Image (tube, rainbow, N blue to C red; front, side, top):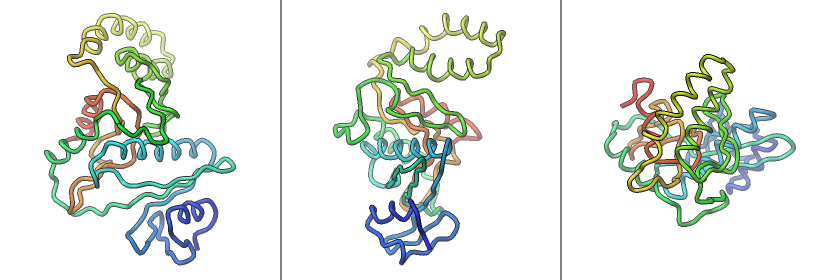
Length: 230
């Protein structure tokens, strides 16, 4: 029987949890399977960020690209349930790329996830176990250099790497991250868009498990090329 905060989330989604069955994280409902989980402590922050990322992505994503998600925070825990995608479809990568590119647009409806017109996000998100510094910044080059690359360098705490990074930052960032034409606009990003976070269904690709923030759309390409990306 599904109880606790996850049961509250399911009620908010319009289901009676007492009538639903659960196998691992998969919850069977009359309208299709959901993926549900509950977390506490530091893990709860990861789930909060994941749920908020999905909601932000759905503001601009084409239908079917991003799962619908319901979540709730209470007494130090977070529970979420989102639409569960089943694989088995063809890999239509060109179509997937076009749909992700459509998601990379400035939202008209800012929803509950304050879109400030800057780069960053309203709460921390996690890429794997690594918490991302999403502090808002109006400059894309500075945000990516300081909040993405620089933050990782600081975590390492290695003086040699820090010294080399400062040289690289001074020379490379102005060349690579500042002069965009048209100027960089903050759009919803997945943030961890490698092949393991894509499910190829009969209706096309579905992307999940994000580490979202508002950034330059091409940032999603960097992760997409990792780990044997297509």
